[in-house]
Image 1 (cartoon, protein in one colour):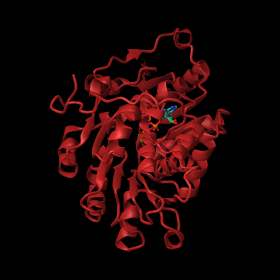
Image 2 (cartoon, protein in one colour; image 1 turned 135 degrees about the vertical axis):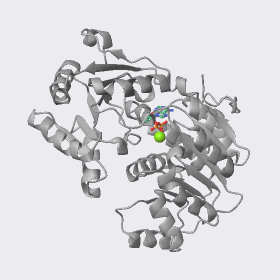
Image 3 (spheres, helix red, strand yellow; image 1 turned 45 degrees about the vertical axis):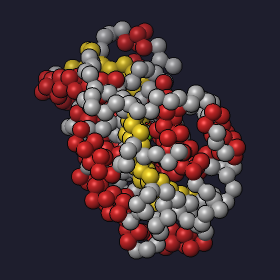
Image 4 (cartoon, protein in one colour; image 1 turned 180 degrees about the vertical axis):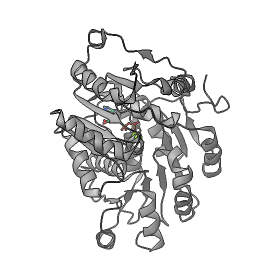
Length: 394
Ligand code: ADP
Ligand code: MG
């Protein structure tokens, strides 16, 4: 069962429609015009507590709509006539921050006089300073490094903040980001509310959240209920590492995915393997943190637009690709950390769609494959020859 029996789910109230949430008319229009009709479970449970000013610890599986949960709540709470930054949303990667900024800006389409600022590396600080000087930026969406820097340089002022959101909270509170997040937090008014969201919440992170959350509403899904309903998971054994490539091409021909993400263990392998795929005549692109921002943005956009059907990447991007057409995820190499597995496979089967995850393994990977199954309480089956009929993917 779940890893944290101690924490009971404390939000049982459900809002089955967006109307029931009593959102501002312009916001409701924005949500509908974005294409949403009914709220997902996490939205049904999570939006109102935030609107009411409660701290929130929300854990729900990948692809279930956490972005709109905090976006709608922030838009509802922020008052455009109050000329200060009122909401700050932090994400671990610039791509994810850009994605959230995009969602929230689109949903805010009909809200007049509301400014939403994106603060990520690769953008000129002078440009950010200009925007801040020009008009109040009610909501700021960014990455911790850049935001901390801008607060230190007194370019952005968070002393009137009301809502502090950490998306991918477990990553934000783990080693790489914790110091920056704590620094940012220390600049916020004591009464600002804090909202933490993630698909996974390891025990040691829950301990840390106790220090920054004040009597939070908690929505937690146990780990063994985390795997996605529409997703089938298989493994394929190859005798030697060198045979993985052919196995992958066979799979690709057989399954013919709408779009596909392939995870490799290193940046070097991503580069080299992307070239191989292209040589096969398949439109493929790659993304990893060793690339410059321009290439990252360009490749991500091409994949999003469907110009490239295959995206090759590393765990650095396991959490931040939200493209609904992805019907296949291939773990060309198994993840080094068990925790990454759920994020990788969650790139497919987003929002109830169907998908397949396939792990290419050699004998050496046996232990890790076993560990992953135990960790999540799942069974990954060997891929049957009749895979195609079995899946009937849309
Ligand atoms: P998470 O952050 O929980 O992994 P996202 O917020 O990225 O998930 O949402 C996953 C996908 O589901 C997105 O493409 C999003 O547009 C879609 N989605 C979220 N909520 C709804 C909704 N209420 N109705 C329709 N689609 C939704
Ligand atoms: Mg998310």
